[in-house]
Length: 286
Image (tube, rainbow, N blue to C red):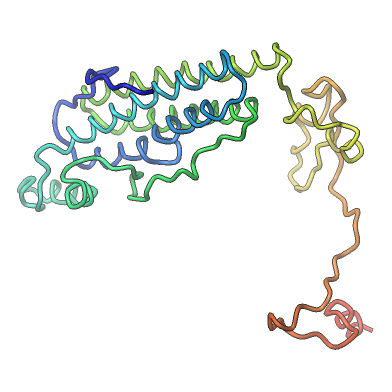
């Protein structure tokens, strides 16, 4: 059950309108790494979680907080769109202002009546395809940490794109919460390991004897760069504590594939009866 409190978690009030920055703010609302994504992702992971207790409660608590951030950003975008000019010369008489007017998102006025929408800064609609909820908490928490890193990165970039004190104040709050949330998910990963629920590799329960040879601990060098194998990933104890990392060049271990003739009902390019294209090429070289 959800309830709504009209008071915002943190103030979302610019010092003045700015339709160009309102468009930029759309990225951290409806972009791949925006608040709509993390809010719905954490909630879906929580609702789907079959393990009652602290992990499910964590997901539902943080997902609900992220909904509060969605409302803050929508409110900020709405206020940045106050008194939005409907024509270039309504903004200012200078050519610079007219050019800046051209950077706004016309859908803000035409579709949303000077309001925000679940789209990114280029007008692409937000999609549930951005949301990951695999059912494996370790995999999901690792991805959640990545989402918070990407989110903080984008908000920090936005912070350097405005001089509005009110906007910067709210962005500082979001940057600060992303700082904590990164640590939160990394701490939750450590907790999963300490509780014996999951570890690297994910899924840990898949039998290691079913893996192919020693490839679970080998860096395969498929580049001519001289330093690809110079790092921690190519030598020393493995991260899972069960082996030792090594490196070797990539090699082919299977024959070149030769496919049978295609289904004639699908009208493929026909091959000569009894011959593959590879065989014909070999015959031409004789």
